[in-house]
Amino acid sequence: METVFSKTKEKMEKCLISLERDFSAIRAGRANPSILDKVMVDYYGVPTPVNQMAAVSVPEARLLVIQPWDASTLKEIEKAINVADIGINPQNDGKVIRLTFPQLTEEHRKGLQKDISKRGEEAKVAIRNVRRDAMDDIKKLKKDNEITEDDQKNGEKKLQDITDDFIKQVENITKKKEDEIISL
Image 1 (cartoon, rainbow, N blue to C red):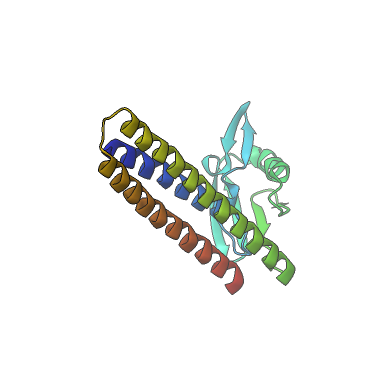
Image 2 (cartoon, rainbow, N blue to C red):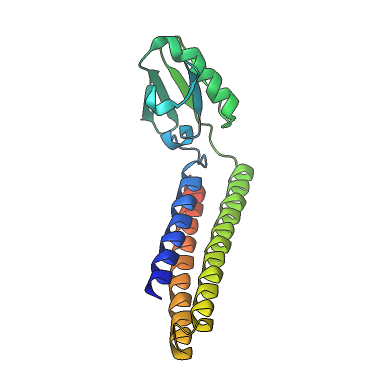
């Protein structure tokens, strides 16, 4: 039964990691290099992440500077950023690309908060689905007479405690991201 718990924790941990990755890509009015994580540049026929082709820096709170190691890729990087539709128009001066993050309007903030809340709820659903699968595994162990009824009850309670802990972590991560949006 311990393997059920370890697999469950591992899957729930992946849900948290996925949520944090999603949140890092949300533009919060502050320059964040992780917004470029999903931007792939066609580099000699191979889709390549921007951070493997250029130095990405944050000289100011609302400015991201991308300086390619190979100057001939500047146009391709600019094109990939436009295609990725991250909501910011790149400014190419021939040497570097600048991404200026606009101030968030109140309306945009509220939209981001709704999106954050929705993604938080989706993460909770994913965690509950993991719990359901683990409960089925425990019931199967009982059906196959590998554990007693008391073991099943204790296992289900422990599973619920694990789930509650991960749900609380999702709520904390979501609250932290919402506070970040509000404070800008």
